[in-house]
Length: 377
Image (cartoon, rainbow, N blue to C red):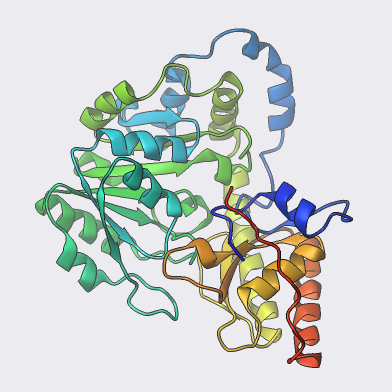
């Protein structure tokens, strides 16, 4: 099977695997399971007339709200059509031609650097059991005029390390002339402190943030970055005008003003539900959820006769989408990722997992069912 590069491709799953399912439960994406903040739908409907005029050309009001929220001057912020949009333009402006990318991690770092002809050094994990970052190895490969990409917590492992380790990496990188791009798309769902306050004293630091994941508005596409004013001023030259639409800007302003309590409640819910789901999946021997701090779990099937293909395709035929991790560098056919959803949906996932495991136990030598190719998006 050819794994997809990203989750959320429900149309492909429904067409190839579950044409008779009225609805697909999507565990392949990792957005806030509690949905958007209360009142956002009504605010966007009431503000529909904003689409009849051009939006603010550089989203200045949104950036002003970000300034208040993070207690940094507005010239530290830039807005984009999702954090992936900002990632691609960032690679265009950095004075580098070499990337340091720990693996496994978000595929778009590699793709963005590859498009611009960068040389890429892939840093393997300390081990292939929990895929933890090899800090000693990282220090050894830092060279001047490079950019280091760190996803905190990491996608797909869900791992995050303490703030002092992050700052230590950034300090060393600054001494060696290395830019550090910290992707905090999933950080609001954790108790880990943000690196955003560090941009005031580290001119080599760029933080990427995703509003779409935190506030469950992926269809609107909204992200922002935080960095030294010199980087931000130059960055703006690489973006087209009106790169953030009016409704996305409105949603961002609303979420920053009204959504903090919602985000805090979401983080607490995710923490409790993730712990419960980990315990329940562990009971479905022999699946092994890895320790995580994000709103998703990486599950290993290495100690079983069940593969990622088995789980992905069998669950898809039952109307449940999960993330096959075969497209992540260094990961093969033994890991899947599931997003944390509400309890009702999580119970359906557990029931489906039990059916897969029981079926494998009953017919361990049964010939494999022909598997359709699930092509890249």
